[in-house]
Length: 256
Ligand SMILES: [Zn+2]
Image (cartoon, rainbow, N blue to C red; front, top):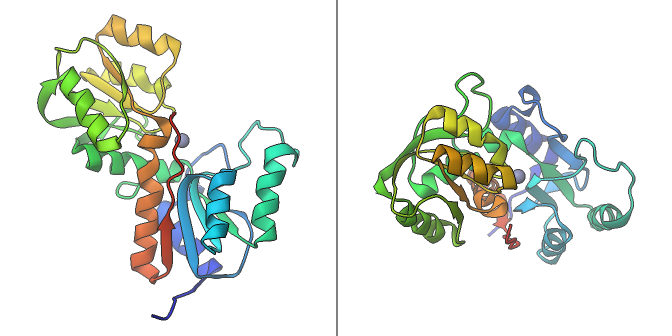
């Protein structure tokens, strides 16, 4: 089979039209972050552009890395030293493009992390998590059926292949839910305000435990990585279908 290749510019234009990153306020640059080859034959998708993911991409002979968590975060040390030097060196030496979409990949209504998580957990979306600012990533909705909080924990574990940390009474019944993938523990109050039974996100912090207990809102910390695996993978599948270019999803396990 002849391998299909596309121009980087064509790919970036397509991604930009699809994800509308210029309309999203974000704390990292979206789109092309590190420039590599002009012709793209093989894209590796993954959650985070860590050294391990770069090494995999090199091993697979890929020319492009497409991730949710790229580099150049607002407020980070701007110097090219330490692990940042090593990562950039590996990418530049192998002429690999690094393309990253952060919030635009959280919120896309079909391919985004939140939409993909809802599909996986069979959640029915009924509205945005923040009705006053619908651009806030996250949704509210319903479970496929009412179940005990412990059963829902098992449901999440079976779908994400990772046991969530659950705060709440096991025998309570949960049916309505709010969710936001990644590190959205700060959105628990939005779930409380929405009056849902449970909130799912990737990470948890100390004050969130008290807020959950004192409002009776079940908290499921299901893993930042685990909840954000699906957007990059879905975006890659979309590109494969659209352009016939080779795409490989690489999951570098992360317990958090
Ligand atoms: Zn994230």
